[in-house]
Amino acid sequence: MFIELCCLTLLSVDNAGAPTFSEKEWAVVQSLSPAIVEKDTTNKYEHNENAALLGHAIFFDQRFSSTKKISCATCHTPEKYFTDGMAVAEGIQQTTRNTPTVLNAAHQRWFFWDGRADTLWGQPIQTMEHPDEMNMSREQVIATVDNDDALSELWAKAFGVLQADDVDANSAKIAKALASYIVKLEASHAPFDEFVAGDTEALSFSAQRGLKNFIGDGGCLRCHFGPWFTDGAFHSVGVGPLDGGPLQDSGRAGAIEKLKSSQFSAGGKHSDDPMSMRAVISKHIAKRREDWGAFRTPSLRNVAETAPFMHAGQLKTLDDVLEHYSTLENFVSADHHRETILKPLNLTKEQKNDLIAFLKSLTSPLPDSSLLTSP
Ligand code: HEC
Ligand code: HEC
Image 1 (cartoon, rainbow, N blue to C red):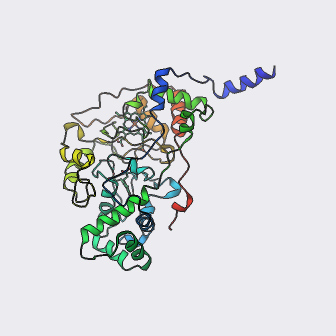
Image 2: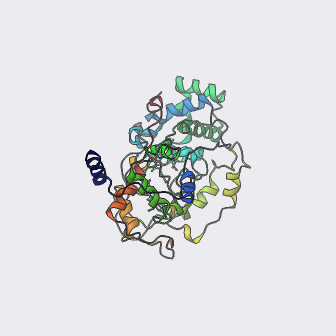
Image 3: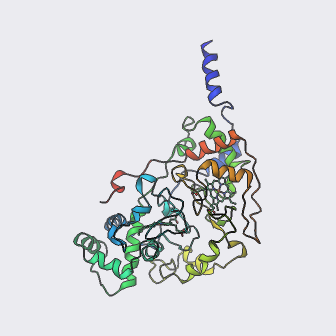
């Protein structure tokens, strides 16, 4: 009698029970964990503690914006999993893109939603100089470090004497210092990883069913695969602009020229490994027709903590995201091109809930608290 009662209760909470995984499916599940970041040979300061401390201090310092009111942490807020909770970021002025997290950012093949940077350290100078974001020239950035006792001391420890006239080389060092801090911001050990490692209780039955759908009928794995849940490539999933109408953001298509002309690229003068695979691939990259309106497949680790979603924060909740994949009702085609592999999934309410439970199981604790505030 007691047993029956217990199981009836269980059933009503989680009415379809635990799914079974075939040997083949389990091999796929194992390909999704554990997540490990590869070394970036284009930044020789990547694991330099003094460089990381300098980067850490700059990340939280509002003096690195023209209004002295904005730091990297204004948009990449630690408590919000290093995002800002807004559809599109607001710095000195409103921008046109959603703030991605910098947690685990080091794993990425391409940076920014359109992949216009091919290294992590290729990103910060662009952001600091952007008139809508921080609006500081690289000369002002360097002078701010040079004129501050604590920062210039960290600089000296990491890089030696600051030669103030070598502006671009110094900017690259600041960028590499910021990257070496961001490399520490790892949050890639989630209940899902415990489950793959053998703890069958780490995931609810609902999350397990969501996982099975994710790697199976849902077709998510075609783009979100591997331990970072991304193919490192660019696609259009048909989410239109925030205010309706046709697509305006050219996405990947607009990034290729910027990537090729960037001073701070894997193959450029300031790279510590200009012959690296990253550099070689960037050099040979060519614009393709389907790049117009395509955006990077984002990682799904910690995704439940980083709403709103998509490149311009068009979708407010995970439920909205799954509704989109389920119906493709508001699909906005990049005109000549439609991602042919996407078909409406017609998910039931329960399947959606299961997928959401699975996505939530990819949430890891935030990194050590010492990394979450100014040093
Ligand atoms: C005004 C808000 C804002 C500020 C300030 C800001 N960011 Fe960002 N950050 C963004 C947005 C928005 C993007 C995506 C832009 C795009 O894709 O075009 C981004 C992208 C990034 C990325 C790439 C992440 C990825 O997944 O590709 C990194 C790394 C990053 N920022 C680090 C920093 C650092 C370091 C600073 C300080 C120097 C900084 N950000 C300041 C909003 C901001
Ligand atoms: C064709 C490749 C592709 C498939 C298949 C796909 N995705 Fe995506 N996903 C993307 C791309 C690209 C984006 C970003 C699109 C944008 O910003 O315009 C994205 C965005 C997302 C986001 C928002 C992440 C964020 O940080 O904003 C979630 C959540 C997501 N996908 C989950 C799924 C799930 C669950 C499935 C299966 C039901 C799935 N995706 C299938 C490529 C794909």
